[in-house]
Length: 195
Ligand code: SF4
Image (tube, rainbow, N blue to C red; front, top):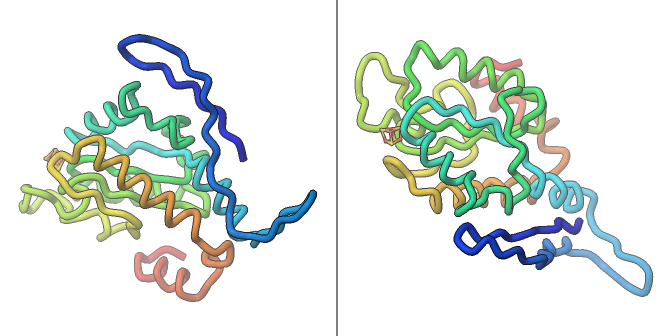
C-alpha cells in the first residue's frame, strides 16, 4: 500500500509532494517475492483506510472538527472519508454527552454498522458521563456498546484524539481476521444483548 500524501502548509500553502510509505508487515522477501500473514496484510489495509462515523453531541465534537481540519489533518491517517451513514463506516467516534434518551440511538447506529467495527469514546462524557453525574446522563457509552479505546480529557485536545485514533489503528492492524467469528467476541456482543 502506497498512500500518496500532499502536504499543504496552512500558512504558506506550499505544496510538498513527499510520499509517505507505511511499513510493510513482517514477512519473508526475496528477489521478486514477498510473503506475509493474511491477517497482517488485511490489517495493514484496514488500519490505513478507516472510515469514521462522527457521533458528536457537544463540545468534544468541536475538538474533533479541529482534528479533522487542515492543521491536525486526520486525512494523514487515511481517515478523511467521514460519513453519517453507518453502513459505510467502520469506526464510531462518540464525542460528547450522551443522555439516557440518546443511548438507544447510539446503540442503533452501532448495530447498523457492518463488521468489523470499532468504537472510540472521546472525552470524559462519552467515557464515563464526565461531570454530569445526573439521572439523565449515560455514565459511559460502554453501558450500551463495546468500546475499544477511551480518550481522556474534558475536552481532549486534538493531539489526544489523534493518539486515540492511532491506538485504534494498532488494534485494527493487529486484529486476527478470525476474531469476529470467535466465541469470545460473540460472548462480548451477547453481554450487550446483541445477537
Ligand atoms: S467531556 Fe467535557 S468537553 Fe467533552 S462533551 Fe463532556 S463536558 Fe464537553
